[in-house]
Length: 209
Image (cartoon, rainbow, N blue to C red; front, side):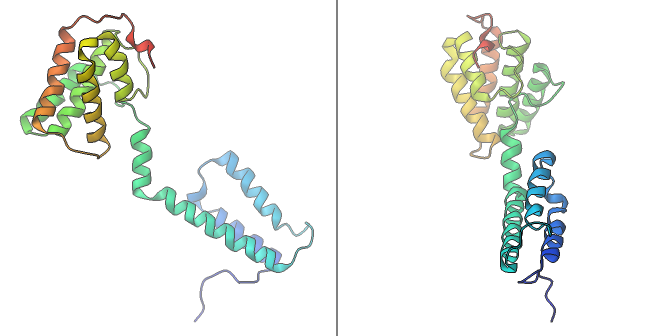
């Protein structure tokens, strides 16, 4: 039975060929410029014009590099790892072209359906989007729920506790740490309504980042 594995004692040319074959796989093409330099450095170790080294050194280099790269690819391509990266890379207002009115409409639709998680998410987005539209907050791409709560607490100090609680619930629902109940969902909508009627204390709370 012939196993499709690298020879344990490859020659320089075989070692270079195996490493080139492994490094040419698309899954490693993440950072082209840095990767190209790294790849050239590794392949330089197996250059036939370089200083002579025992064959077992090249065998060790080939096997270790392939093992490390395979492990890194597995870790980076795991679904949960991709999920964490995509989740943490987005701010509260991560949808282009959606205003406060649209978020409120979605939240109210979710309320009628009993989808409390969606009410919390879109309800909190609505109050942040409304603050941006009123210039209480500046437009800051990637602003998190807690960053918004800190800035809005300065503009609406009487609502600071409710804003922090809403941000906590938003993050818990969005990142899978917990589920919202009806009371929490309705409180977010009520908070949005109170902020809409309230007069902000600061003209530009968004200056706090």
